[in-house]
Image (cartoon, rainbow, N blue to C red; front, side, top):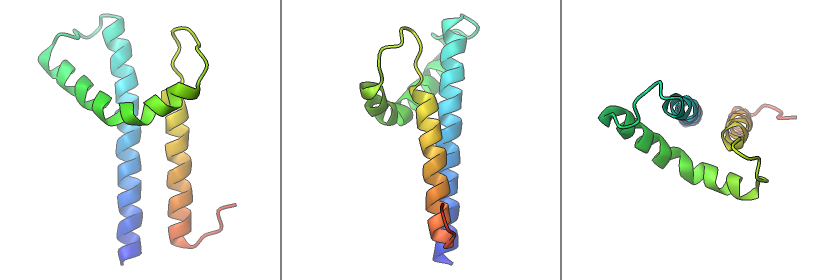
Length: 99
């Protein structure tokens, strides 16, 4: 019972993080191309929330990446890491062979 709840919690947190990262990237594109007004109160509120959740995870990745100009691939690396961590943790909790 506890194992099933832990699996559900890990999957829920991983899915929420994945969606917040994707929405942060799309929102930054929409703001930079002036599709959405960055001065709007609600847009700013969600952007600050997404930054506060994802920036502590993205900053260590950016520290080790080379400068690619205006291209930031750290969200893609973080998404892959979250997928892998979710896969391995749930596999371990279910007692499956990971490799």
